[in-house]
Image 1 (cartoon, rainbow, N blue to C red):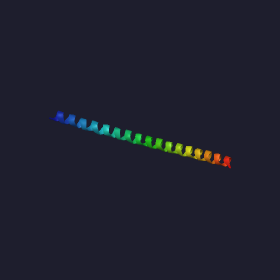
Image 2: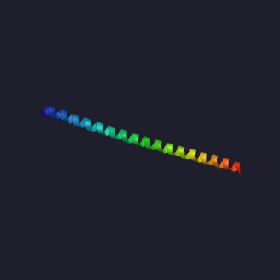
Image 3: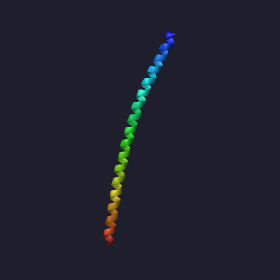
Image 4: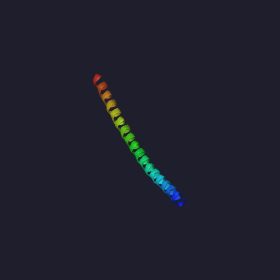
Length: 63
């Protein structure tokens, strides 16, 4: 019986360690996605500014 109990404890410990590793991986992945999203937003904002500037220049040339 003690051998089975020991194996169950080992399985429990392994599962807990695996879950901790998964938690860290998920947190890191979420941070990476958040950083990527911020980069995309900045890129879109810059592109919008460029397009607005081009539009304004074209309208000034028409006048």
